[in-house]
Image 1 (cartoon, rainbow, N blue to C red):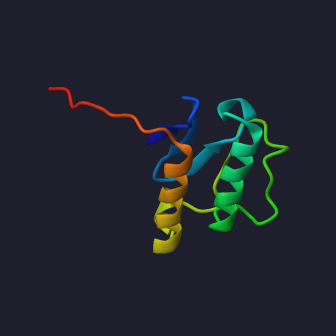
Image 2 (image 1 turned 60 degrees about the vertical axis):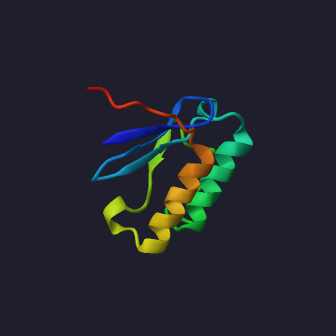
Image 3 (image 1 turned 45 degrees about the vertical axis):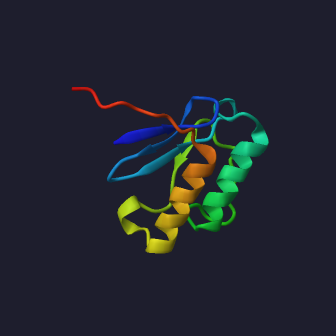
Length: 95
């Protein structure tokens, strides 16, 4: 399991072998529009139902599909979405 931070430094996605959970609380994003675009991008990939909105969600929601069940196009699209909304951090290996 691992998590990814959004552009404001707060975690917006948790990924495990059994679920992908996106955190949708507005305060986790730089602005509400950014959160809404994130949700829309996931809907376009059919990772959320077409009628899903984040308005009534208190904190987050699991995607409609597991990582292992994504086809190649969904997986590639998911990585692109993460690249748009998550920050890049450089790490140095310890040891």
